[in-house]
Amino acid sequence: MIGSTGIRRKRKAHTKGTKVAELIDKGFDVRRQVPIPIKYKNLEFDEGFRADLIVENIVLVELKASETNHPVYYRQPVSYLKLSSIRFGLL
Image (cartoon, rainbow, N blue to C red):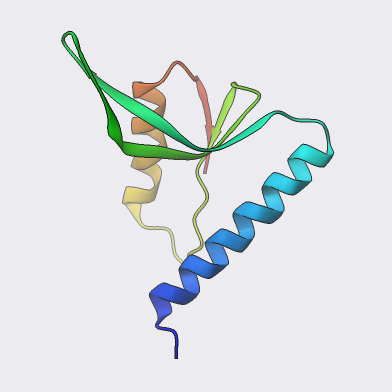
């Protein structure tokens, strides 16, 4: 038996795969699980944050497989946008 967390993970993986396939079929450049580095003074840390999708190096897409929207879901892509050079995000 799969717990509710396992079901959500499978649903999210399926959603990502189908969305990426659709975008690629339409000719978009799509990168998956892109590291978002944290820069502090002269140091750069690559671990920690990963954007679900970056499309055409213009739009950061964060996918959620949830029936309810928790406030932290909205803050996550905003944080990624602040840390990256990308200006547009989609949740």
